[in-house]
Each structure stands twice: as structure tokens, then as C-alpha cells.
Amino acid sequence: NFYGFVVSDCQGIDKITSNPHAKHIYTVQAGILAGIDMVMVPYNHTELFDDLTLLVKKNVILMDRVEDVVGRILLVKFNLGLFGNPMADPSFVNELASQ
Image 1: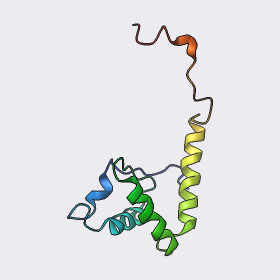
Image 2 (image 1 turned 60 degrees about the vertical axis):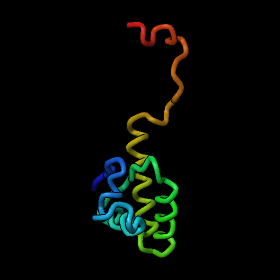
Image 3 (image 1 turned 135 degrees about the vertical axis):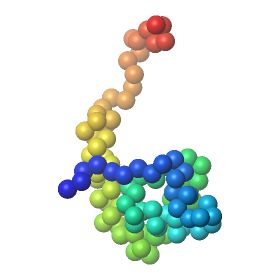
């Protein structure tokens, strides 16, 4: 079993089609079905969310796939300690950038 996850390049999902952004929903569908688990889109994340939601509602992308991906992503983040106390220790404030 694979317990990691596959991350796209930043804005890389838009490069799947020859005319970038021509058929965004197809691009999302093709990328997810090809195995991308986490799509990096800093600029059009709401469009990605809308397209992915529609694809799940139409059963093009199964909810089982979404649940599997979410579980693997959370497991990796948990194992890396990313759910511990996220706040920095304020006692180090005078030491930051001091070297």
C-alpha cells in the first residue's frame, strides 16, 4: 500500500490541456484520475473547488477516492508532527535573525 500522496506542481494542473485553462473541469478530472492527490493552485482555488465538487456530485470522481486521499494526507501530516502545538515559542523572539 502507498501511504504518501502525489502533489502537482504549482499551477501544473493547468498545463494538462494544450490551451491552458481552456477546459478547466476536464483538466481537473484528468489530473485527479491520473493520480494527483493534492493540487497546488494559488490563484484559482475557488474554481478548482467548484469543479472538483461538481465532478464528485456527478460520480466522475468517487467520494471513496476523496476520502482515501484525505486520510493519506492527514496521516502524513500527523506523522510529521504538523498537528502539534503550531505556535512558536515567544521566548526565542530576541534570537531570531540574530546570527
